[in-house]
Image (tube, each protein chain N blue to C red):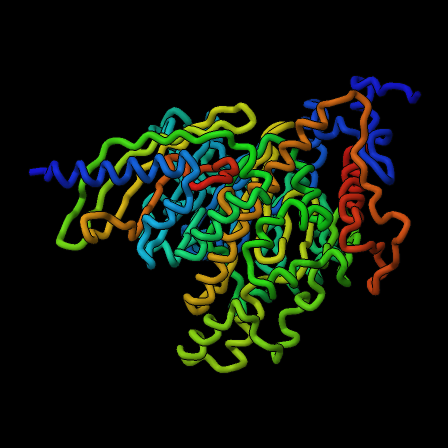
Amino acid sequence: MTDMIDVKPVVADYESLIKPDKVHTSLYSHPEIFEEELDKIFNNTWVWVGHESEVPDVGSYKTAMIGRHSVIVSRDRKKNIHVLLNRCRHRAATVCEGKKGKTKSFMCPYHGWGYSLDGALRAVPKPEEYEGVFEKSELPLVSLRFETYQGLIFATFKEDLEPLEDFLGGAKKWIDLFIKQGGGYPLKVLGDHRFRFPGNWKIQLENTTDAYHFPIVHKSFVSSVDDQTAEVFDFLDGEGHVEDLGNGHSVMVMIPELVDLDNDLEAAIPERFQALADELAAEGHSDLEVRRMVRAVGGSGFNLNLFPNVACSMAFFRTLVPISVNETEIHHVALGGEGAPSGFNQMRMRLHEHFQGPMGFGTPDDAEAWERVQKGSQAGSDEWILLNRGQSKLTTSPDGNVSGAVCSETGMRAAYQQWKKMMTV
Amino acid sequence: MTDLNLLNQVTAFINTEADMLDFDEYQAWLNLWTDNGVYVVPIDPNETDFANTLNFAYDKADMRKLRVARLESGEAVSTQTTDKTVRAMSRFRILDSNDTHVTVRCAMNLSECRHGNLRSYPADVTYTLLKADNEFRIEEKVIRLQNSDAYLSSIGYIL
């Protein structure tokens, strides 16, 4: 019999919790591990906070979370983007509530300190008592370092972190492919579905690179689509693969023919999109424009999992917010084309509603499985989560990366190796 | 002056609809709709252009049928773990009425029990009903959940 792992000392010994083929069950349920994750991972890497289309105009803002830190993503009068800590420099009250909106400034509700869109402290009521104490220029909202790639905004608390593009590395090629689904128009966020499930954030992180569950958990979704579409989603025996892209990122190609949406524009229009094609043609769009939109409307044929909190998942962004060791908030961010015909964006939203979100035909079944994982993982004190699927059949991808079958657990192994690297620093 | 007779009629209709959903009479529920009827659960409670915005659900006839088929097939694990819903409809008010349609707003207090956990989803619900041959048909049902703009838990049933 193996020795029982004493949970207490284990917290400092993350090496022993992550094996090449399995991770220890305490990663889902140990509160001290969760607290260390917030610090060692979420405070020390690039965390996705939004897409540029979410703050399109002067005065646009959205709120986001980096671990437990509430931040504001804003666009100032010069159209520059800022990522600001959402706390007044005086007594810490949040200066911005709500998901998104437009404003001229951020006002603290407690003592009325006012900040401009770039975070500068502009107004302090009854300033005379601060004479000789501080200058307003000394106390702007704390500004975070951020960088963007193809419109995706990532921020970090770590000033000396490698550039975003180096961190994304092999994932950049897949982001370039993903953004093609605007159908010839710039990618635009159309809204998001938000829900929580009673389970650890890594259960969701794994799911985006888990093709194995699809025909089981999503049987009812597959039953709800036409035969042609069901065939497209029957990808476990297909030519797809999962590739380790480094830094915890991975890509799972489920539908190889939908990797590059610029290709195969001459292909036959799928039956379920024929009415859309007819509508777009009747509006006067050229045959090529129609074909480009129809090809893009269902999204890309892959899930790109970016460690630690976002995925470019077929047709949407999936982002996760760790709430506690056993609670996670998920946003399914719907995407469309900026300035695209309303029929195209409507179809994008209807397809999103069909599968995603708390009332979709897919997500509630995922959430049920994840909840059961969290509950089941409490049983036993020294059990492991297996990640060894496809481990004996690995190959090297054309890009030189470790690659496995589409339903292998290659992507999860990649994520947990990054987890170990960050937690053992 | 409120038309109490009409108020009684719509109240009876909406209570029956709620009872059908609580007691799994989904085929009968499908028959309550007009062919062009739309079932909507918006995210933004102030939204009115549902076709051009993202909703939690935006079901025309075909999607309603599919949603019912999903519930009845037993294929979806999430539909098997909510033991029971109980919805109480109240605060009925007729917003508009003419020869062909009546628009009614009411409150819904829905409770679900999933894995032994009781959770409630209060909502404002607005019905647009077609008056047809001494009965009503639903042309539009909009369910504005009180927490729609924050976050939900997964909902495997029909609200």
